[in-house]
Image 1 (cartoon, rainbow over the protein chains, first blue to last red):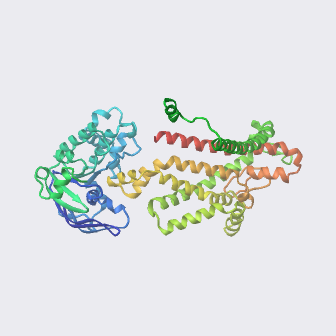
Image 2 (cartoon, rainbow over the protein chains, first blue to last red):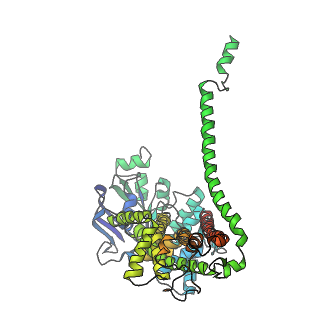
Image 3 (cartoon, each protein chain N blue to C red):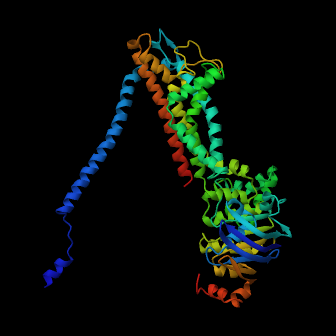
Length: 248
Length: 301
């Protein structure tokens, strides 16, 4: 279970997230929607501490995963990021072979057994619905794949280290509709084993893939509820306006 | 009525008056610039052609593999080639790891910190120091204070200092060209910073770093002043056996037989041959560098 308690986040003087409270259950898909610059990506990146890489940022409040504050001094960022995988907006495979891309996370975590690595690579590629397309060219460069395949490769890469949570930052925004629907099917299938949080600009996508939706605006969580309710009968007028496209 | 309407819409395609003059100016400027461009090429071709024409005659297998004989008026330049290779390898062993580490530190560890700005200012200044000053510094520090004497190691360290700025800067540029998405992608998989640097960033920056290395080699193999007081001998009948031995080197050998040999007139063809060999080595290095760069940019596209 993922939980945010009174989270405030600052880029220098800029107050990017304002007192956010949220609970996300295991094996659910949660979507974050909202206009650009509303803080949804920033909020997502709190949960694998990717914001740590940006200088001059500050966090107050607590981010908990299974009751443990991930910003506690005793928490190892490296261990955290193994547990909380991430898929980025633009497919970002490494300039390595398809096989080595997926094996990367295993190798940096000290796995040496060749057979074990091969097994996990195959399993991850199958999970990401990419295996049949690449099984005969695992040694080829990842750059030879199409954008949609690259993104699924990045998903396989994230799955290989066996995370419990998968963060996706607009994973389909750079892809064509067919690749997008493949990614969406994938998200739906992965829900059984992973807790997924996805940031998206695509309203239909949020309604298609998610169980719960959070609507962010100007650093605030305006509304957070079941996706069905959110899209049919939102509590706030702002949400209604955004969803129906009256602004944003 | 109809006639005038037609005129209204007809295009003025012939230049006249002011337009004509602008076009003339344009032409004059264009040809001047083109001419100046050719002058530059011409100078280069002239120098190189001069050396090739005069030096090609003495090039032979014996010239490359024999020691100088008869007071350096005949024979080959083998010891000088060996000496230059020793100095190149020695200086790279010193400058390459140091420069690459510095580059990594500057780009991966402390972006925009005052220490980085300091290193950048210092390296820029370092590259502006005349090479003879490096030579004198090398003599004072490596030859005298550290007691290496005139030796391969003293010369290599001095040359290494000279090219350190090149290695640092090309490393930094190479690392800058690595997309940040590689870094965040790697870190998000639970890789440490060091793992990210060694497994993802360096491999993809490596070809560009190698380009810097090769340019540095080209520079090192042609320098005379830094080794003048630190490594080279006027004439040595034997090859070096340790890094504390003196060596002959191509640029200095050239200087010697052209200005203070036993019989300058007699050794003139050998001087041209030496110059040619030196130029071929540097040219080959530069071609190799641009070849690698082209191959890589094609691969990454």
